[in-house]
Each structure stands twice: as C-alpha cells, then as structure tokens.
Image 1 (tube, rainbow, N blue to C red):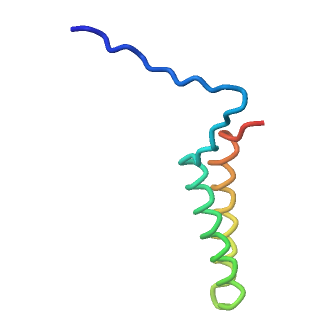
Image 2 (image 1 turned 90 degrees about the horizontal axis):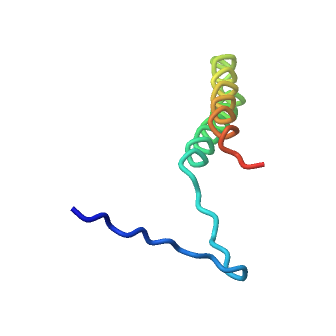
Image 3 (image 1 turned 180 degrees about the horizontal axis):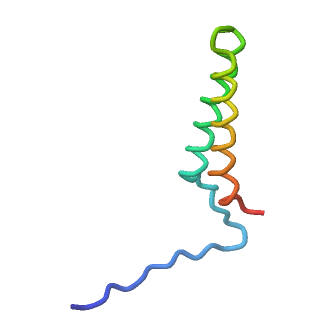
Length: 73
C-alpha cells in the first residue's frame, strides 16, 4: 500500500482566501438569535416574563461560552 502524496496549496502574498464561517460561529449566533427572540417575547408576554428573560440570559451566556474559546485575538 502506497501512501498518497499530500497536496499543499500555497498562498501568495497578493492572494487572500475568504474567511470561512466556522461551525461554532453558526451555533453561537443561532443561540444568540433565539435568546433575542425570547427577550422580545418576554416584553409582550407578561405572564411568563421572568422565565423568558431567564431563558434569554442563559442562551446568550451559552452563545458566549461556545464562541469565545474559538475566537482569534
């Protein structure tokens, strides 16, 4: 069994690759969007205001926990 040769893509100085959207970014933005929807629902649904605000805060914290470790400084 022969090993397959590796194919490397070289990037020249003038050539830049477009940034790719990572899975963590998609998940964290989705959680943040659902959190915003919960916060908006809390404003119009007074019977469940406390639970919806708690859910919005929890979702936003989860989005931050998922996104921040993978962020490049």
